[in-house]
Length: 64
Image (cartoon, rainbow, N blue to C red; front, top):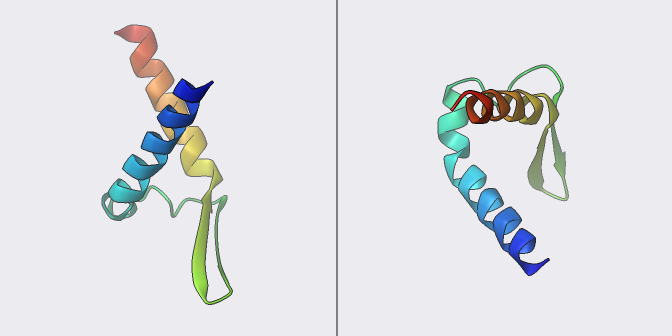
């Protein structure tokens, strides 16, 4: 269980660090990615981008 918590934490840190690069590539600005401002902070929920990246990762894992 603790291993999954560590993996999820590291994935979130990696994704937040790569967020500016991914935005320049168009990931995070697709239809279905939600952006809103709440309590003076900008929040992002990239649903479509997550599905797209998951499908690409799945295809890479399947064929390697």
